[in-house]
Amino acid sequence: MPSVLAFIINSVVRNAAALRTVPRGTPAVSALLLGPPPVGTPWVSAAGKKDLVKKEHLLVLDEDELQEQFVRGSGPGGQATNKTSNCVVLKHVPTGTVVKCHQTRSLALNRQRAREIMREKLDVLFKGEESDIVKRKDESVQRKHEKRRKANETLERKRLLKETLEAGSKPGNDTG
Image (cartoon, rainbow, N blue to C red; front, side, top):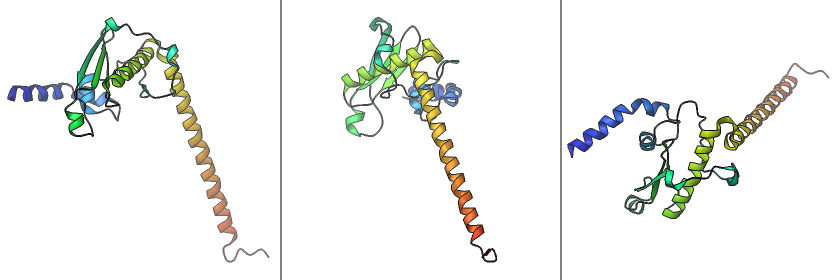
């Protein structure tokens, strides 16, 4: 067993630089397995989310270009999670893109969702900034920034109103 442990430690040390480039929220084990996204491709963390893009606009996957593995999942769930191999690891061989999906306890649903996520990732990879996913994500970010800006303006107006009311009600400022 020491050789397995040494292999794991060596792979962690080799991939330490790759871990620094992976976005926050990505589990470290997934980052080691999957690695960082290719340089120059936009990072869209919304893959697999509902209502981001219509499915008919995405690429069609060729099953011959995919390698599929079933591995044990991780996370909460105890023995039910640790003893079942219902986590799907899907690799698109021509591009080297890897997707790991363990969203449900069902192997069939995880296979389906892994393929949807793979289609979205390949769409972003091939179309880049012209991808519907990237466009909708950008629109969502713009709406969020606009909402935050309006909230800050409202807070500033309230603060100014409060200051003027306090200044007007101080003793010695009686105008009457």
